Amino acid sequence: MDKLSTRQLEFPAQLVVQEGAVSESELLSTHLSSKNVLLAIDDGVLELAEVSLTNLFNSPNCITHSIAAADFNNISQIDILCAQKQIQTVVAFGGGKVLDVCKRLATIRKVELIVIPTALSSDCISSPVAVIFDNTGKKASLPAAIPNFIVVDTQLCAKAPMRLTQAGVGDLLSNYSALLDMKYAKGRAEIDGFSFLLAKSAANEILGMESKPLNDLAVINQLAEGLILSGLAMGFSGDSRPCSGAEHLISHAIDYFQLGEGLHGEQVALGTKFCHFLRMELSLPTLDPRVLPTIDGFNIKSTPSSLGISKEEFFKALSLAPDMRKGRITFLEHLQDIPQETLEAAYFNAFES
Image (cartoon, rainbow, N blue to C red; front, top):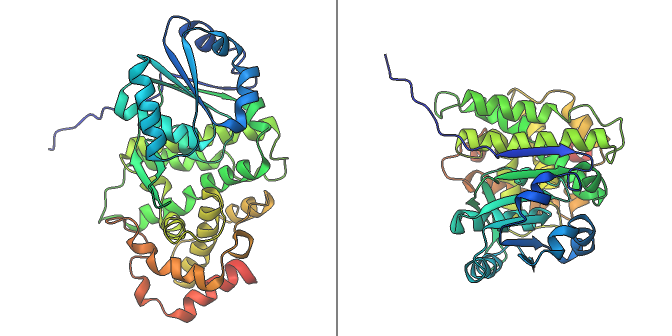
């Protein structure tokens, strides 16, 4: 009999998801009082940070730094500041750009990291991945530290631009498509049962809730919990497979060619729709019938035309999609063997019918 192995899994030391979480957090009021702190924000949330984190702003031990972009230059800037000021804790307050820079920094600098998202646009809150742009404007997905502390104030997140929250729903619901690819790869790639269960449970949090307003605190709470679970599922798996299948490969190819103006969650929702109808054409297992109505019920931009992508550009991205993650087995692995009329039928049913 094979010897049982144990895995060392990382979890946040503290997780709070509730209304008023920032103002009521003892972590922010006491834990940081004796530490050298760097508060990372983007300029768009400066006023919000000043109101929500008054004690930090007034602390002589805290410096504030604005993150202009999720790129290597900004990581370098904040790394230098941490060294110069002997920073012990970084507080990331803002959207995905700020969170990704600080998560990547924490893998380099080994500082304590507290994340306070102000928008729920993706599962980057707790995922071990940071999306960083290189100097050509293209995205790279890099290993990143899971935060030590996560504080989600649902009241703050409910005030975020609706499109960002819609993108978060799209990113979460794309788990269902990714999990179909995990099953597809069974026998050729290891399926981690714990990560599969977490990713499915994460997506279940928001499924069928489209009858409620997206800024309803109950919906925001479910979305936050789902996105956090989704990020942790990737930590369990050791890769992004539980939350990233063929639909993400399409999105990565769209990013590679720098097509359109879609957010990540919108692009993977688009990919989820197309993959559903292509799987149907190929007589493969398809999505839970509630998934697409939830995407459409929340009015998520999830068609090429709504994202500024032409049909020709979409098929250009699709042709590259299988090569975007070497070793990632998805049902698109034999894309070159699928007749063009089959691809056209899936496109029509997904976006034009």
